[in-house]
Length: 489
Image 1 (spheres, rainbow, N blue to C red):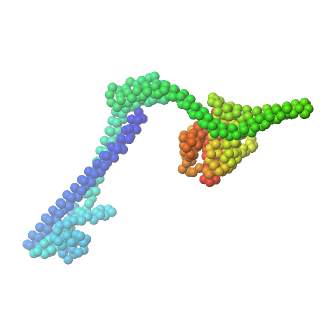
Image 2: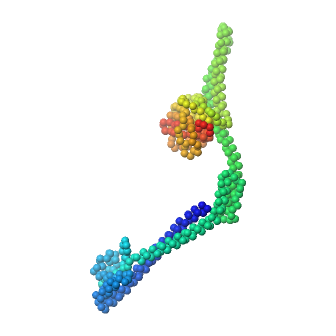
Image 3: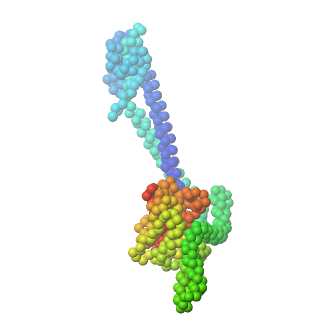
C-alpha cells in the first residue's frame, strides 16, 4: 500500500507539471493570436477611418474632417480612442514609429503601464502625394489580461480535476496490481533474510510480477545451494588461511635459521672445549684423583648448561614453526615480546640493528593466541629490521590504546592494549603506505621477501578483534601499533 501511495504521489507532480506546461504554452499561443487579431482589427479600423477622413476632407475640407475625429473621440461610448496627428507633430512619436509613418507605412506599438497598458496603431493620410498626417487608434490591453486570466482559471480547474482522477486511478490499480503481489514478495524476502529457503511463492500467471516471482523462487533455490557450498568453502578457506599463516611462519623460520645457527656455534665450541679438557685431565696422572674429579664435575656442569641453552633455542624455534590450533588464553604480552626479541636479536645484530624492549609499568595481560601474536610480532619486527639496511634502533613497548577504530572496520568498542614497534629507519613513502597490508605487495628485492608478512599479521590481529595502525615520516621512522582487546573476544 505504501509503495502504491508513493507511486501515485510520484506521478502526481509529473502529471501536474505536464498539464501546467501544456496549458501555459497554449495560453501563450492564444494570447499571441489574440494580440495579432487585435492589431489587425485596429489597423483595419484605422484604414477605414483614414478613408472616411479623406472623403470628408475632399468634400467639406480639412477642418470638418478633423472635427469628425474629435467628435468621435469625445463620444467615449466605445473601447477605441482616435487622435489626429499632423505631419509636423509626427516627430513627437517614438523614433521607429515616426520613421515608419514617414515611409508612409502602417505601424503599431504597445505602451506598458503598471495599471493598464495600451495598444496604438497608426495609419498615414496621403493628400496630393504628400503626407498630411496620421490617424492614431488605441485601445486598452485589459482585454488581453482578462482573456489570459480566463484561460489560466480554466486550465487550473482542468489540471486539478485530471490530477485528482489520475491519483485515484493510480492508487486503485496500484493496490490491486502491485500492492498485493509486492506484499507477498516482501514476506518471502523476509523469510529468505532469516535463512528460510523452504517456501515458494505463487504469483500472477503473466507479467513482470510473475517474472519477478519466478526469479525469486529460482533465487531461493540458488541461495540454498550457495549456502551449502559456502559452508564447505568457509571450512576450506579457514584451512587455507591456516596453511598460509603456517607457511609464513616456516618462511620466517628459514630467516631465523642462519641467526640461530650462529647462536648455537658458541655453546657448541664451549661443549667441545670442555670435553677436551676432561680428556686431558684424565691423562694427567700427577694430579690427585680428588682434584681430577672436581675438574670433571665443573666441566660437566658447563657442558650441561650449554646443552640446555642450545635445547632452549631449538625448542623455541620449533614452537614457533609448529602448526598449532588457534587457542586464546590469558597471556602475558610483555613476556611474549621478550621471547620474540630474543629470537630476532642475532638477525638484528647482523644488520647493525639494536632491539630494545621498554619496561612495562603495569599489567599487560590479554586474551590472545600466544603463537599467533608471536607470529604477528615477528613479522612486524622483521619488516622493520629489513627496512634499515644501514642499521638503527627498534623499540617495542606496551601501553593502553587510545587510537580510534579505523574507518571501514566493523569492530566493537572496547578497551585495548597497544604493542608499539617503533624504528628510526627511512620511513614509508605516502604512495606506498596504503598498500603495505595487501597480500604479495613488497618494495624489497625479489627473493628477499614474499609480501605476505604484514598481510598475515593484519589478518591475525583482525581475527582477534583488533586492528593495526601505521604512522610514518620519511627519513624519520615508522611506528606500527598492534591494538588487541584486553578481555575475552
